[in-house]
Length: 218
Image (cartoon, rainbow, N blue to C red):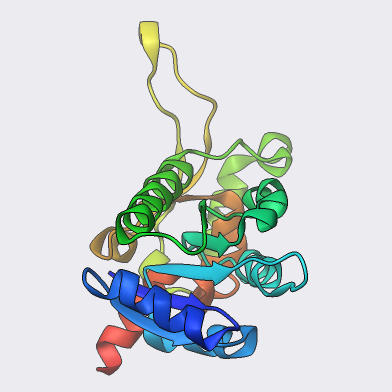
């Protein structure tokens, strides 16, 4: 697994690199700007970020990931007092918190916990949006297929309805099953808002698209 470590203290970066380096590939950076520049070329599987009540880098990173629709598990590391920020950070998308300094096994458990929480969250089907409920889904499906920018999503938008208990079905909704997301280990199904904003708007914000283009360029 490729880890990107964001920490302002050089000795802490070395410490975390040593703790994780036996099991993972690790790249360390000292500030948010460098972390942001590394996300696409390095393609980390997870980010470890310093959280500190006196510094905003971790929360700024979470805002950046959310704003750009980049889905990555983020493990926060900080001294015990930084735990006060944990609830807010978790709401913003962080996957786990571990106190610094820690033993190698404690960090390994935090990484595994973050990866599990991230997968469970992103495998979950989002709620149907008000726009879907208020629209003619056939028209919406056709419009999104016309507006599709990502090569992998061309003519792939469809209306999904799942059979559940006693033969009843879920409400129909807009869905796209992406072949390259499956190839790179991401949940293949994406839904209306992601299709609208990423597949039809900015494919480079999709981790699978980033990984595909990086592999093609190498």
